[in-house]
Amino acid sequence: MPQALKRQLGGFDATTVGIGSMIGAGVFVVFSPAAAAAGSLLPLAVGLAAIIAYANAAASAQLAAVHPVSGGTYTYGRRQLGEWPGFLAGWSFITGKLASCAAMALTFGLYAAPGFEKAAGVAAVAALTAVNLLGVTRTAMMTRIIVSLVVPVLAFVIVVAFTQDAHDGGASPAGPTGVLQAAGLMFFAFAGYARIATMGEEVREPERNIPRAIFGALGFTLALYLLLAFGLLRAVGPDMLAESAAPLTEVFTGGQSIPVLAVAIAAALASLGALLALISGIARTTLAMAREGDLPRVLGSVSPRRATPFVAELAIAVVVIALLLGTDVLTVVGFSSFGVLLYYAVANLSALTLRTRPWYAPRALNVLGVVGCLVLAFTLPVQSVLTMTGILLVGLLGRAAVILVRGRGGSA
Image (cartoon, rainbow, N blue to C red; front, side, top):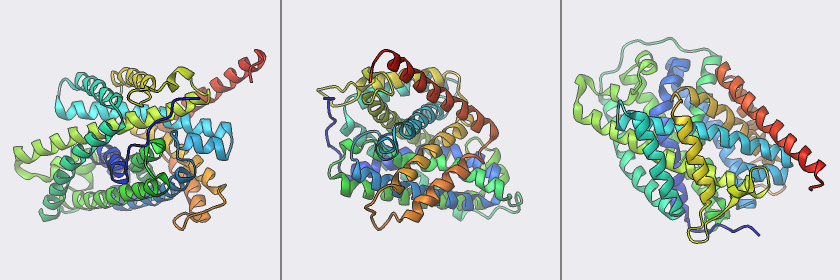
């Protein structure tokens, strides 16, 4: 019987992990490309992404309460729909989020050590992998510290943005396709609550704490994103926002060095928080897939002392460092969004099969989630759709080949 993980996280810790997973990606990576697509309708794109995120969160919450084990939608898909949908969800999550890890590490390097960003990113991956290896309570504690430092800085940016003189003019509103594409990109920033579900085996009283943590993290982050979207459009304007590599610093006129430095520090810390939770979440899905034989079983090894999937976490660090050396921080946003949207399409399909339904997850919401995820996924930039489709096909064909070889060898 595989070594089980320990239930060490309370509801507050799980909520903090979800918030820390979201704000790193959302605030410092996604607003510029989303503004380029949606223009002055950026808040509408944020709201649309949040509606789909709520549907996905409801599906994840009800499934996690029924199946409180590691693996997230990979496990839910296998148990509710079958092995192939489960594999598609797990493979989509792992491949998309590995790219996200590289993006977060590079974002940290860009803010913390300009000119040496890749070296700093590699160091961050190594250090945070070590933190994860110490145990999930260390991960939650560090994420709580990071969130407590980053959120006040973001609140300061919002206040400054709304007290500046309003920006005159700007880009004309985007059409429906531009808003949908921006919503798909913004969804990248809402996907952090998946980490709560993937750590379901480590949360105390999962039937109560997992739904509360998911909705708490999502609600807090939505409020933050909407305030930032309206504030940045007011103070900076959609054109400058779309072109800026560091949009949150644009609200400070005259190049004030201390506020800009504070934003840079917050960006670096938020990226670390997102990277920390990403590594942990990917490791739990990898663990679940290895237990079922969909990935090499050695990746399912759990440390008896620390109760962590140490082989999976070390393997993830190696892959992320390799990706980091050749990754563009903005390009991978579309790749990750496509993979994660397919992941949640499977989650909503899985939730549709549940007979017992809580008040927050009517069946119609699951249908909305499936349709919304697919629409947003296939309105993303063509390069992202084609690249991720190819990667997913490689995984599916690889699994088919392994099953064929096992069948010929007489294995079950």
